[in-house]
Length: 253
Image (cartoon, rainbow, N blue to C red; front, side, top):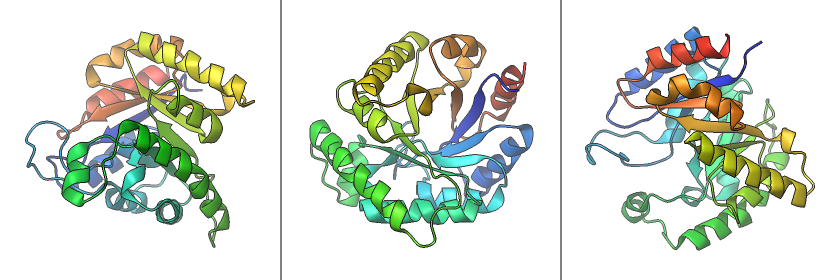
């Protein structure tokens, strides 16, 4: 039995579609549990004008070319899609994947995406308020779709806001993602447990995932001690397949 789950985020910037899909198949073969991308329209670092692909289209292609791994956006931006449409896209990719899709979502933050694609940026508070408004709409739409998802279509919420985001996680999420270092993750994990108490939610019903860099692979035990159950390696092209393989070995040790 594995000590923890292993994932990898294949960032769709400064890369090619063949590289993204080839790598998704390769990491599935070495034993990772999940493959993710992100939901942006431009690179987040490096050359700001490098090649870039839309995340949900990439995930649909990955769903068709893999057979075992969970798939999702780490995480999608609530602002970029009507919540009913967001639910339907996720349900459709869930069918393409045979029931392996995760609906990852957050409030959004990357201003360039908003400005160049014509979305209202607002404020951090207004984007969080919109996420709180839209999450129950997404849940309701998923329940009404015909056909329904094949899998459980878990909702992952990404973020570390102690007052609002973690409350929304306790209310709506099946999975939660945040960043390190381990002491930061441990603190946020404790805050989430407190919110679970307040909303009468079993904290064990929320899977705890953490996004890490390749340089942190050997620090996996500290993340487990901090409460993480699923370590997701963030990776740009050339993708960190070797580091993912090492993490898989640690998980099985």
